[in-house]
Image 1 (tube, rainbow, N blue to C red):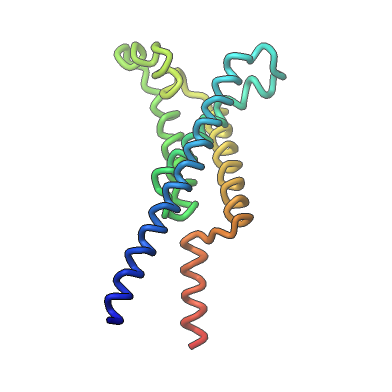
Image 2 (image 1 turned 60 degrees about the vertical axis):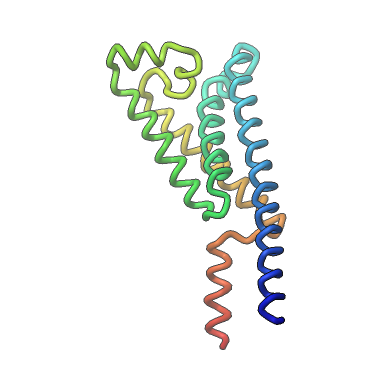
Length: 166
């Protein structure tokens, strides 16, 4: 009888965790969409924005979108996985812009691919991406602390400390 209760309890716990994961994914999807809208807005309304905002915020918001997109996909991973993964992705895209073959430039000439792949390598973009991802990571970490959500690394430390107490 006891094993049946444990089995039912585990199933209920898994269902609750799955529901929680979907709620977190929806929050990250909202962050992705907000970053997209703000980034596109920084391009469309660049003439009405301060020069600094118009020049730098679009790339930083693109990097924010990548970070939150990875968090949406890797919901149970540590925040640092999304941080390093998004930096690697953004830097790879930027360095790929050094390659200027006619076929890839033709693809980059389209609006969507131009937004995703960029047009030419700029060292300043690497700084913008790093700042955007760092801000996203800081916001993510702060929001999780405010909501009392512990990342896996916190859970691992609590497990280690409880083992030491025994």
